[in-house]
Picture 1 (tube, helix red, strand yellow):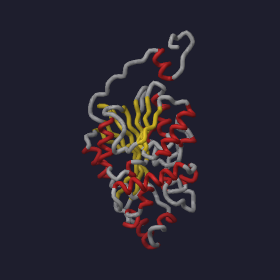
Picture 2 (picture 1 turned 135 degrees about the horizontal axis):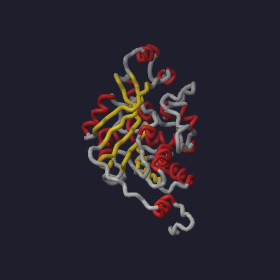
Picture 3 (picture 1 turned 180 degrees about the vertical axis):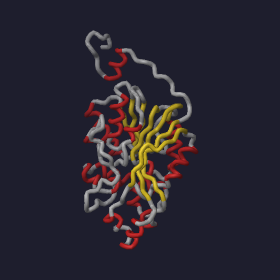
Picture 4 (picture 1 turned 90 degrees about the horizontal axis):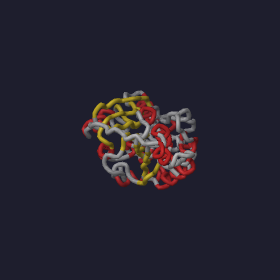
Amino acid sequence: MNNEQELKAIVKNRYAKIAEQGKAENAASCCGATTPSNKVYNIMMDDYSETGGYVADADLGLGCGLPTQFAKIQKGDTVIDLGSGAGNDCFVARHETGAEGKVIGIDFTPIMIEKARANAEKLGFNNVEFREGDIDAMPVSNDVADVIVSNCVLNLVPNKQKVIAEIFRTLKPGGHFSISDVVLVGSLPDALKEDAEMYAGCVAGAIQKDEYLQFIEEAGFQNIQIQKEKPIVIPNDILEKYLSADEVKNFNSSNTGIFSVTVYAEKPGTKATKPKLNMAELQEESGSCAPNSGCC
């Protein structure tokens, strides 16, 4: 497989194209990034449409879970979303943290940042911002976030340990993350592991489930839990692009498992108590001003 910079360039190029597609077109492919199957398979994506804060225009159908559903976000929290795309998980997080909180989305694809900012401006969300940058070198200071979320993104980064170290650095003591990602149990065929398109498609970049959890533990996190797990089945008409008929049959009968997991973990320490804002401060935070409040 290519080196780190080449892999990043492949992913950036692929996701720039995805940003210009609609959700239906993205959902017809493996994590939105491979040639569409001849049947419409939502093989990784979970349905957000009933989730509070959901914004259809920001949903590109690229996720493999619902991390915000499990993230225990509280009012007033500062939340960071890694690989924020067009902003959907940020807007769901904003629904939970409220106008008194803050949400920061990070993505390394300029067109995604542009799309997300346009969505935030259209919604009038002044406490949601999007920063362009790599999630393995976040444009964020130490000890900023109460909660970090991410949806089907870490598997796209070559150096996953570096990303996990960045998550630890940017979380406040006592903060936590909830991340949905793709992991393996068993080995992928070489033809899948070595293909750049399958890497951008969220499969070839996935690592072993045990290794993934070990990296999190070695970074210093505690109370590590798998909040949700579901198997991912790659349709045969996608597999047939890479494997012979016999190889497809052998792969489907093997013990190799591809799973979407939502993992939770906490940074050691005691979470500081948030100071309560008075009415004028709350109205200033939310951009509103009630009559006779004295805040205008």
